Image (cartoon, rainbow, N blue to C red):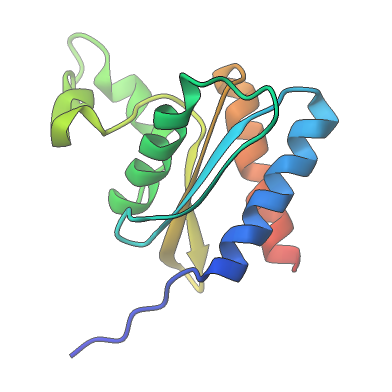
Amino acid sequence: MITVTRLDIADARRLIAGACAKSEEIGVPMCIAITDEGGNLLAFERMEGGKVTSITIAIDKSFTASGAKKATHEYHASAQPGAPAYGIFAAIGGRLSTVPGGLPVLHEGAVVGGIGVSSGTPAQDREVAEAAIAFWQAG
């Protein structure tokens, strides 16, 4: 038997609040997804003006970050043609994301969930995800 620590809905709401605050600060409305440690969706928000096409992308970024326990940007370089993980984005029914903006959420060194952000540039998405985690940790 094991004991699992995971995000709850209050954590998910706090992460979304932190992401929304940063999104408003930079002037880019985002789609924000929060998943538990196994990649299951806990909460989602599409800010007014967030791109419809970014809904699935944000969810898949969060799924990748929590399920694979790795930031999506860490896959990017190794997934290019000729690199060792080329084609990995097609894994798991195409849900594995290599685009920046998906980060695992850690508690005491363990992955307890993930956040995925989409609608800005990859750098903006990552910046908003990082700010959301910092906001949650300060909580």
